[in-house]
Length: 271
Image (tube, rainbow, N blue to C red; front, side):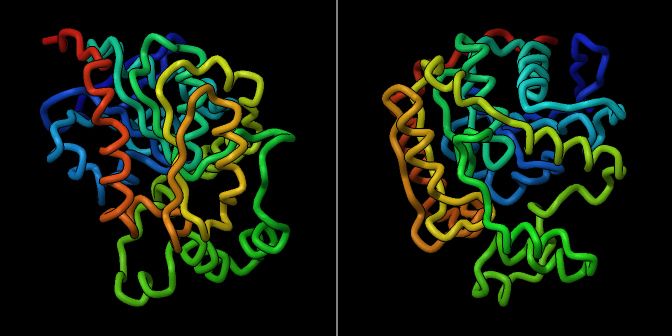
């Protein structure tokens, strides 16, 4: 399995499929590359070479018991692009992956061709957090009930009634407890508000209208802070809009990316 080594010596496992312009897909908190299993083929069939990687703490990557941050995850993404010889890629990040993508586009402007931020938030005091009732339900002692709450925040009742799993967006089952805590802290401490105006890549902010896990009120905040950003709301969708509503969400992202395809630079893949 291909790997990248960070400056700090952490080994990251990454996965590339398809042919065409490079598209880096960033998953949500406490999830591995499997977050994207249900939809990445939409982009490969449209002529993109998709790359995912397992965040530190997930999948086959190293799981050091050290503080993590969304900014560090962005640096990890750069290490993956370097290992692939990709000079500039399109980037699509959802949930915490959208937070990582904000840092990637702000700190490494020359590495991002076009940017898509899905179901995410700027974080910090300016971000709109989930309600107290949602936080309470997710942290209840009955872990089975808490897990059901998470599923209902991700998907509509209609989807859950007809899809029995596996559910790709509710966490990497193989993560050790310390890595889950580190991921939770990294996402909770995210605050890219001051960095957002530095983003120069064409940007789409996309979100489900019925997302209570990460409220859609964050859409105008991000779009108003990132120069020339555009927005797209997916009616009726919850947090996992990209999977449940893929028939409308994937085309919306592809339509956005299409005029910017020439901006990507695949470089020369090593080997």
